[in-house]
Length: 476
Image 1 (cartoon, helix red, strand yellow):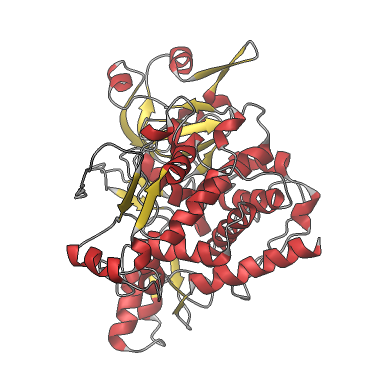
Image 2 (image 1 turned 30 degrees about the horizontal axis):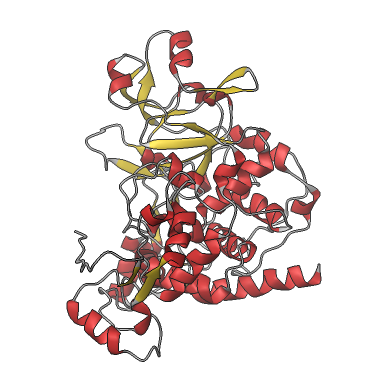
């Protein structure tokens, strides 16, 4: 439960000290006396405990200049700077990153079209859809919910047939996903299809009226979980699909495939997620998404589009988007790091036609592509490698904790499931096949995990990828 302690003085120009993410008053007292040396603290320490360490950078001075940054990040022009909502950064390095984000153009400058989807209660009461588990016959009958989606993944989970509660879902096995896959859903359309189609979100553009369901869209979970692994979870959803208002969606006015992929990639980065987390909220509404930074023109646009589309174009339903977005630069790109495994695919794709080899399916490859997106976005926005690592280390403690303990990879790049990892650690033996064998609950496919088993160091990988991309820019 978050709360604040505020000390007020006589009316004057804004000028005060602020400290956030505190778990003991002693941290403030010691931070006021701290000399500023050492690593800046975050939300949790290296042991996963709430960070009580003092540091001079915890104490931040807020004045009109600071309010100007907050205003640029959060508010529209009709809100006075002095009435800007407050931002809660845990140290000065993260506050410095916000200064850079404040100077960036906004996604909202593109004039995006917004869709809230079906109202889960009211529109169901009106008879447009009802609860029923099953795999739809086509995307035109798909109604997505929040758990279906995750960062750069439109096939994250599916509801179980039992539909007992909101956690009765199972992870999807991307390695086993067929090209014609359609997600199982817990809702089905009802009534006449003409009525169903007409009642969903429509957009007016240059005198013409379009259904939101006719287009590829950026979609994300509307609920903001500010203390989870990730808060903002953008992916792409194909034409035909609807969603309830637990998901929000946007489309670009031009239906430009590359621009849509770039917008989604930028929104999926740690930097964009941080800008959402800096102002804790219960929902990520239209205004929040439109205030996210937009990556400008440069070679990084092709880099972002390739990586994000290889993460999200996981079935043939995405083939039109892939084929529209493909460009010769996709055939010349390469990984900026990662593990050189026997089963690792090249990053470059030399043909415009979508095939089952386009999507990245192995966990380590998907991690590396997402990590490289984080780096490319940071580089494009003028954020240094050290600043990016500080954001990761101090603002994403759950993700950092998973990286250290839960995300252990085998020699084939797969994440070792917790039951397998626990059995190996308990026995101390990596050679017993039975202990290394696991059946995926979503696909029913059996995998045998191969040693060596090891976690990956995200900060080291971020630094290495940043240096690689910086070198490519310097050479161009």
